[in-house]
Image (cartoon, rainbow, N blue to C red; front, top):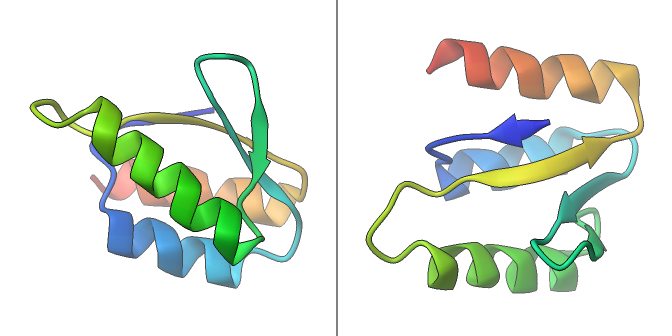
Length: 78
């Protein structure tokens, strides 16, 4: 699932609410488990560095269907 124009604070709040694993998939194909605060910091830092002059976008993979719905609702609200 692609997320566009990410609000980093809102993303962090959603990750805290997520019940299952949520993975950030990097351009290199690596998967960072964003349930880990360390991976969250690294992932968000990577996103911010990559997109200094552009909107922040990310590809994520969500295991829990309820969490997936939560992220879909987030993208639909924008």
